Amino acid sequence: MSDKEKFLGEFEQCILLSILRLGENAYGSSVRELLSDVVNREVSIGALYTTLDRLEAKGMVSSRIGEATAQRGGRAKKYFEVTAKGLQALKRSKQALEKLWKGVALSVVLQEGSRQPC
View 1 (spheres, one colour):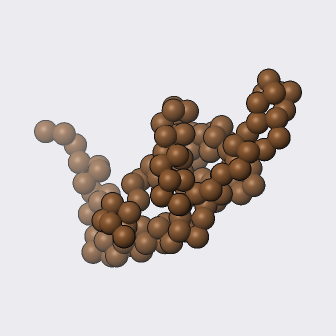
View 2 (view 1 turned 90 degrees about the horizontal axis):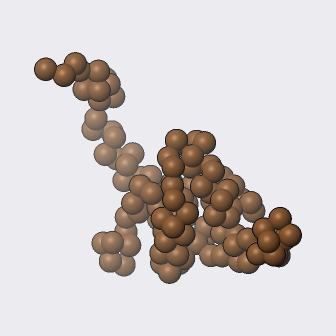
């Protein structure tokens, strides 16, 4: 496994966690909506699908095409699911962050954020 595959970027983590939260209802627009609602992050549909395609190429998500609907002009939704490889990557990322946070006093972080500019 290359170093690049060992670690997930923040956006990749957010997408994988969104898919897990949404379960069977995880498709592009629902993932985008969740990111906007929960973490207040506006994401272009292009950036979202580029990342989903990359995660699928890495084997971290799988996709399936749903049925076409009249509401979508006859187009089908593409649904996503996190694979075992994706779950392992998330677990590694969580463990790495937890280890790093252990050496950081939260009070110091909060103080830094509340400093007034000179």
